[in-house]
Image 1 (cartoon, rainbow, N blue to C red):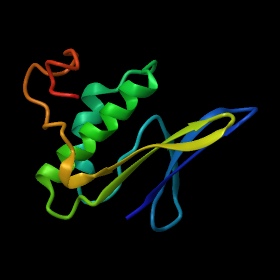
Image 2 (cartoon, rainbow, N blue to C red):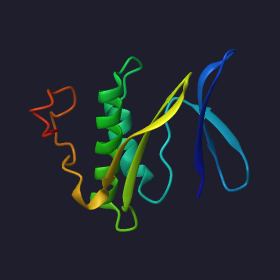
Image 3 (tube, rainbow, N blue to C red):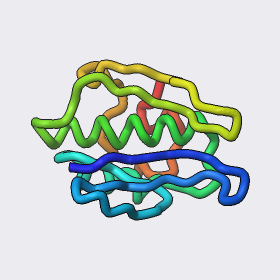
Length: 120
């Protein structure tokens, strides 16, 4: 099991790291941790774009978590979504994972409109 660490500094800008249980750090563009992470990665890899809006990124993250909870019995609980900016961080969503309204992606959903993929 590991964790994700996010931050911002004036020299490197924004960074995200995965830190595993041995303390090994890996820098990347996106990470998923936990038993459902392989399911979440399938959604993240299909939907991630470098220049996403905050709303698009939030929806993608929630979709990835929903997909993980749909496929992995050990994933779930409350989902907290935080926005990290140069000026600080704030929580932008708190959702009971049992009530996530975003269904798992189906073939042809990637790149669809919000209405087409069931996002409210």
